[in-house]
Image (tube, rainbow, N blue to C red):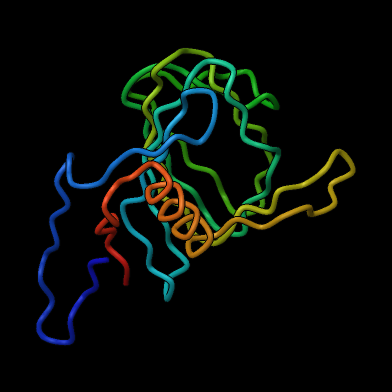
Length: 153
């Protein structure tokens, strides 16, 4: 994993092909680009397939999302995120992500954690930066990739 040093700050570049996408189910994929535990920040890129659903969750911090290809939506809202769409999710927002077109590409910058909830709003599990990183590294190893050089601060 890349870590930032203690000297003067330097820009850190991560090339598009330097980190692998890993399978997360149904042909959908995940790439973890950056995790900053001090800021509670995690940045991921997804390639999602139609029908892929992320469990209903609430965010403890804001989320910024940019869609570069395809389409997805939140079941709780009328709008659809399509190529070129930007979405801001304030802390506390509750939703269920559903992909509606194959090969949908979305970049997420997440602050804090996802609190995955059941139908009654009870927290069933928590997903945060360190957790997504651990999952990503485990999946990459299981798929035979060399250990990804994720930017970790």
